[in-house]
Length: 349
Image (cartoon, rainbow, N blue to C red; front, side, top):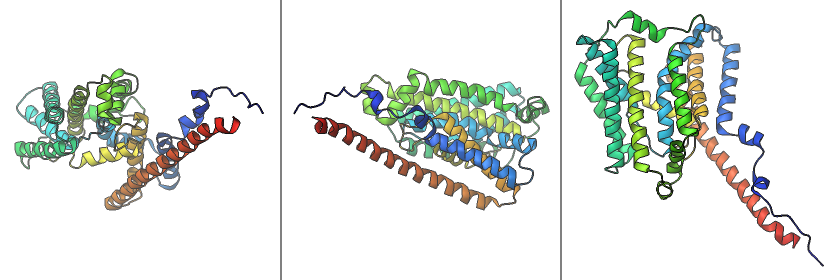
């Protein structure tokens, strides 16, 4: 008995439908959950569905949005930067001390950015050239940067910044509820999206996260890529520190204490793997807004900050568990597909 002739199976036969690839992802789930939270809060919480709430929500998450643009690629490489919150405080103090010394505001901003870049360079140099773990290095610099910031100003605060600058930090675009700071964020977002998802540098970031050795053999300059990311992370944290200072009109050494945990929580919630190699910026942005919207709705409902932290923590843990379960199902499905593909020629032969 002659066997049937079967055409060789191509990559297209094994590929998932494009709808499934676009919609059944961790990022899509976070976006859907964000929409549910926004609709639910609008229906349940009085005054949530207002232009003023939208404005304050964007102002509140602006600092985290800025820092997450670089925290995401750093975590995709398998590293982490725990010093960003302290860098926000240090850059705030540097900016305040420069203003107190009589320097113009733009000069103070440049000095703060330089301090951020140098701090990021210090982190990156220790990690890539001394080969120390990013977690240990940035825990150390988190304490170092915060200590310098508090040491420079002590318990005092620098206030009295020019109103045109403080008003600009809180200003809205025309009559819309969108703050001006969102323009800066969108510009930086476009650059970050191009860098991470549409450039050779970005492909190297994902390759490093999957395997540093394989990435190096593939021609990726692993040390240079990681160093650049830490320098950019320090610089953008300093920029966030300047914005934080102008928005609240106060430069203090304890500004943004604990901010790094909020950034990391939003990035992980947005689908970036804590083990590296996976993540997308649209999921990270949705994660930031999800935590921000949830916190805003609960505050308006007179829920205490302790309960808000508990709910946020439960949401984060649940998202990590859900991600692990989803990955397990994907691996099982891939194994079944592979087993089916390898058994098919034998049954038809």
